[in-house]
Image 1 (spheres, rainbow, N blue to C red):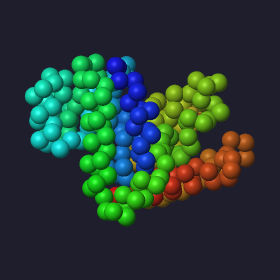
Image 2 (cartoon, helix red, strand yellow; image 1 turned 180 degrees about the horizontal axis):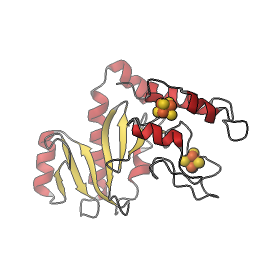
Image 3 (cartoon, rainbow, N blue to C red; image 1 turned 135 degrees about the vertical axis):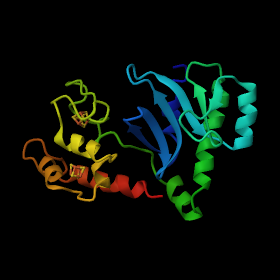
Length: 215
Ligand code: SF4
Ligand code: SF4
């Protein structure tokens, strides 16, 4: 993809939540539970093919008529969503403006109180099912772990029952589950050798992810 800067750019915005919708293979950028942009990736190569974002309909129509690489939202509502070809000719500055607008549109859809909360909060990444983080995991690099979401529940040590369970229940992470924290999750959390440090880390992280995802 031409636009390698997108993830870093979006993750500097206050309150952004990034996750991976594995079934679609979309990296989603959200405020609360509302998506404002996504990178749509090929299932086989993980190469991005569209960058999708929300835009005001009239602005979108004008842009589509000017740039053939901007099309109505791929697998989205065609009025409010638009997709930019990842290897197209839309200038970087224009794409940045479009992503800024998408962020602003969704931000403004919240109450003033919620907007203030979002603007005061750090971006977060939801990158596991159980509440841990891959980006600071000691096993990621040495064990070449692909991550439990990316690998459909098969991190470096083999099938993870927590990740598989969560995936089968169609939750983004265990915190969304009605039986959270279940015995299985607690067993992993409190494992004498591989458990959380500090204790209960993944449980607290899941709770935090839930709080931040409130509409
Ligand atoms: S073991 Fe793998 S899936 Fe689990 S947190 Fe570490 S990097 Fe992520
Ligand atoms: S909390 Fe337990 S039951 Fe719920 S998704 Fe996670 S592992 Fe499965």
